[in-house]
Image 1 (cartoon, rainbow, N blue to C red):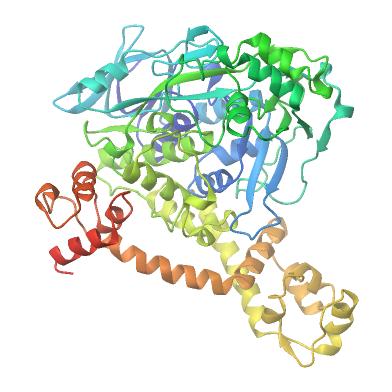
Image 2: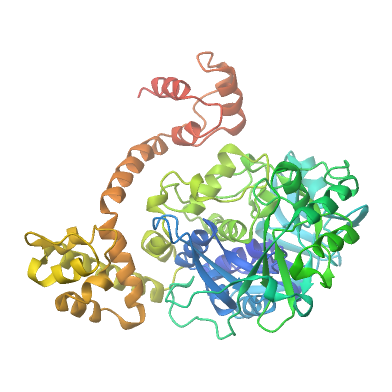
Length: 625
């Protein structure tokens, strides 16, 4: 067994798996160390991938040549496109997955990746020499050497679980915490904090009265996560269910608040604002008499159900008693209660945009150790960290994504520039250029970048270029083809729409929100033929992309122009040019923030909270701009 590697990845969660795959596929000899090889990429909370803005991240991971989208598609038991009632910038794919199949598909992927090795053990120390990480030490007494180390320990660093007054060290239920690393990194000058998250109880579906629930079926159209063909799930598809809490539930929860670690001082760390516990909900929204809950299957064949929306750290007796006040759950049996978990994270403003530590050279951090929450945010960071660890040790150029290029770029820039004061979760509202970051065009934005890097395969690149060519041919036809009133008016009038008084370009007709290419093709044989000529396996995907390009062309062009103007500031280098503490023209807060973060560019400086436009103008004047 070898002891020397190019890259070592600590932790095989969603960040670690993507990091290890990326580094290995780029050519680095990579070792992935995990506490339990049977729980690789474990979905510790909800067995679902995607959702609002998170689904866009997974599409970006897939477009870059990552694996999360492929694994999700293969283990999916329900797929839905969220936010369909809004514009395409808000459409967000989401998939309920079979928890065990997700693990099995990830393990199969890792075991069949060239240059990638695994070792089951716990890392309790990094080897650091002269401010440079050179390896790791494990609980079994082994030392592995590496030219770069990626730390993706998730919630395991000094993890502590809470169920009422009961406190249990661990990173997940029945799994030990990781100790030693935090204390070592703090001694080297890395800032640490504590965060908390939680998970709800798991229920036995045989004890649920589904006649008292609202069914929520999945969708069965062409949408999925991966751009690669033929990775669809072969598993039975299952519905989810909706129930609601009531005043009886809330009263029992209120009576239990003195025993809640969140309210009696037992937990003092920062929790997620946008995914609160049920006890936090009834306190924060005291006027609400009901909260919506989702009963979601954990797999295709298991009876275990996940109760989305009922995260809790209350004593298990209180949780069960409260649940039994919901009509559908009056006879419910729980497999296990919900619990809260506290864990260590490191200040992400001490990272470069490559996710390399500013304090310890060749050390990369990705996932919840950077203060984020969510599988998707973790996986996106892991992919970028894996790429850059390889680039670092082979002398390649750093690989980063701008805010107008990817949600992953927004995520990392927010972390590095602004830091976190609560677990960071991605939302579409965080992306100022979200019309450019749609889920439908992630391959157009990112696959060529990754192909040039050597991560995305030729197959991906060829699929993307073929899609782009066919889409452009279809949109060009729409611009050039004139629709005659006599041909289209019967259909328009039949739908209660204004008829044409003269010929109109198909492109302009498509701008009507009530019309689509599919609808128009029923009356226009020429358009029908153009659609029929498209690649049969990707026809619907290409038509949707072309239609969005036509309908939203004005918005896209305007946002592109704005992004280009903003990006000019990201081309003006700042790093190393000033001692900000001596620039008295800057506000006191700006001096402090700029000195602490030392931004790479004026653009990054402009996004630091507390740095005003007038402060930026002063910097531009000092730079001779």
